[in-house]
Image (spheres, one colour):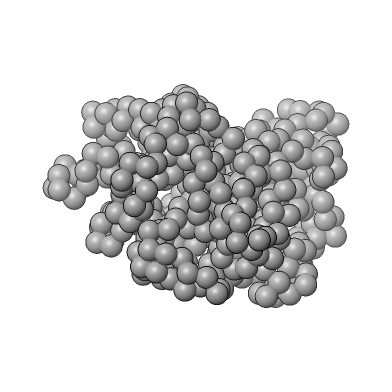
Length: 416
């Protein structure tokens, strides 16, 4: 019965990795129950996930390939409605996906990604200066003071959203990943983010700038058939949400891992291991995404001894990939910067590979290196096991990250 009865996912996300271990023991693909009693397949092994992410028989379009959604069986106030109601590059299929990805991809070429570096450095220094005004023994929430605002403000800049507008939208974005919300809150989330994006688009039509929103509006105005109003609205929100939430939790997890493993931190601070290794090992062992909803089988798919029937929803368990013992052996759950193979799929693979991966790496390496350079004595203010997880099975992070910064590094003497 344990392998056939659906497992009810813990909406509070209280033990993501423990739950993943249990799901993996049930097989590479096993049935789970989502909020509202909706059933889906959870994929829990590296091989199964890689196979499905590159399989043309799998789509992210609920409106095209999920019968329960098409037939109205999924209510408009379903707790996870924002994840499936979007009509953008992320959820599009086939030619529509290629069309939208090509439009958005222009903003994330290697050249344009590198052009963001001065702004990344500026934001990082501004936040570090603010942290520096705290006393060395004062308890500081590094999530709200650094991990959150750095990527959130950068992505807002990229889409041309003011800091005031971003702050108003932040609560809606946070609620979208909270899997403990009820139907009324879920509907408010959907209405809230669409309203915020509509306001941004209206503003940018009147005052275009050097930003992604203005670029997409220009593309739409050149040929209205290329980008519908809803595609425009939903695509901009996807960039805002995906670009900020994942990187916020990456910083949270990377800082936590380094402070909980002083021997590993010493490897980096001594220069024996470069910061890019910290990025990949964190993404491997603590993927910022846990379960990502949803994909759908376009045809029947045989996988790991089970049949995922046409139209069945699929939940990709990213937190299972890098910790899969079949990929990384018995030490798969250990944070080890000297590990040669740090393979992960945290940026995805195949047609939905993250367009912003280059920018995310720039933010990650810049933010981490400068934080630890400025505050080499930083330490957790509570034991790692005392950190409270976010109330979600979608994201992997903490409600807060209390630290004590210690003394600031003394600037090197300048030659005159």
